[in-house]
Image (cartoon, rainbow, N blue to C red; front, side, top):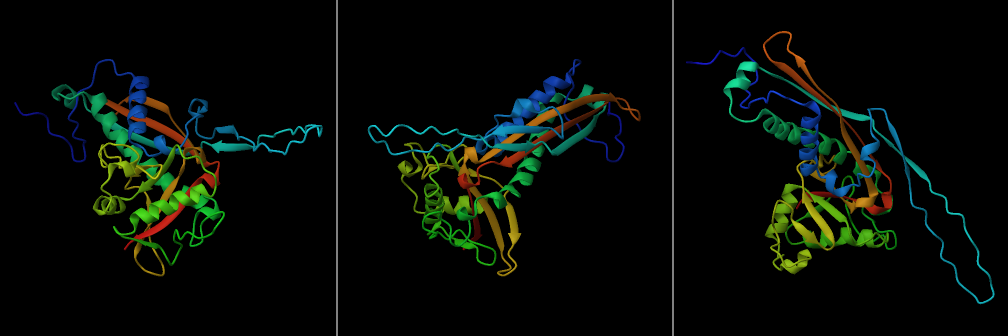
Length: 313
């Protein structure tokens, strides 16, 4: 027997609902899947996650002070400083939501669990929305010494590109470009561990076509390209994302990508599903499902992050 006819625009849900749909459980599944896919789960610290309650919250973050090192002389006594920890405010001022309907007949006839099916899809779409939002913004907040044609806090000798003159990246020079990014962080005394660089797909492709053949160059003895993560390169964990900011340069009229790199301590990021509801559908049989994800991010150490403005050479 043929199933009921759907009205135009009615979603085709190929999944089934469990009788005991628990919003809190579904919310947890979505956040878990979101963090498994988003770049910011890897490149930013999430220490303040549990302090979020709603959009509009402000989290006070204490930064680590720099301790002064003094010369010691016998009999000269010791001078004690009083370190002060500056506060940085993490504003939970961004929010994304989803809302969909589940028809009882659809749910009954399908053979895939609704919760897993929709948490997969919602997590993927939420990841794209949040990554695109953040990656399109934070690169502008890095230290001025970690970007531009004269990058380098000590030498000012690294060309990371600027408006009107993006760095032309090819398979012949991509290794040099990435090493320069690492050197910029070196000049800021950024720790070697927990460094990252996020490449657009076209740069990742060039890396695969480059002369990089020795797996040891990636920091281990495993295959260079695996699991969607490029691996380790010059102390960087290399990630690939289609969500980096891409612009048309006003001077060259060609597309240029704003590539982010840095250390995990530079950024803080927090995200929370604060509302998850199921409601009776007033216009049809079934339920309405909706969720609200609030988040915030802050560049708390601009010296530990950098910006490469690159075009395909």
